[in-house]
Image (tube, rainbow, N blue to C red; front, side, top):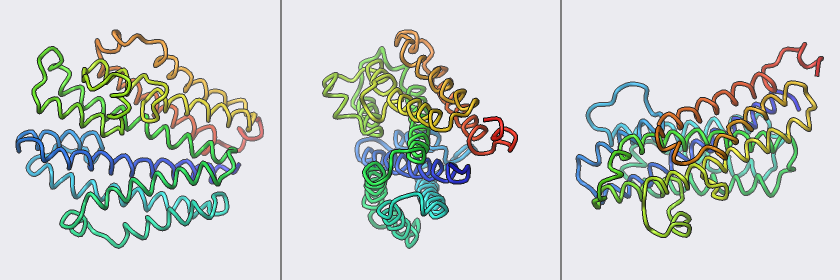
Length: 313
């Protein structure tokens, strides 16, 4: 596969996953605004801003307004970037995939921040989420599950693992110290909000009932191998896709990428939860660093490799 094709498929998938993640988190926290005081709302939106990477600068003043403007910009920007990458490899994806992505692109292009937030923000966010889910379903059901599809899977789940880690890290930093205290209604809603931000509340309750404990939340969202939005599940998918690409390319260097994913998977599989919880922030940081390392090596091996490397393969 041409490196430019792999690059476009990979980034198309990452950008769309990022847009869906941003829309999902903002949607949940808009609903949580009905539950708490203005002080709690300010802290929550600051946490959302940091978790979504909406700014690298300190935020003061109206955190909700900042999240509105920059969250909308991130969602629309990601959808436009996903569509542009899809356009560059139009012949590699199915007609159904292109039509769905183009449809949501045209929908968000005609809107602006004031139209969304002064009108029906939840409707806009639901459109983004549902469009992303439909695109993923169309991708899995209408595209050959070959090398191109594997790059799409790699992009989707690498973005998911990194974004989920950042979301969990911000939440545990603020609420981990309250673990030993009885949860009041506000703190209880924050843990429910975290699970809903990962589409995990109902699935969590089926495993643990509605008994919310930080260790159980961490175990479910970090180590559960069956839930699609857990970090462990995402890393499993990354490793499987990279191994499939390695078998297809037969490159001497491509095995290095799969080994990096395998190392991260091993850490999630064999590190005891008690050990993780001793310094959970450091563990989340390690996950993100390894995700970025996998991303860098994917580009070195498959996207920006020199001609000499291709001749040696």
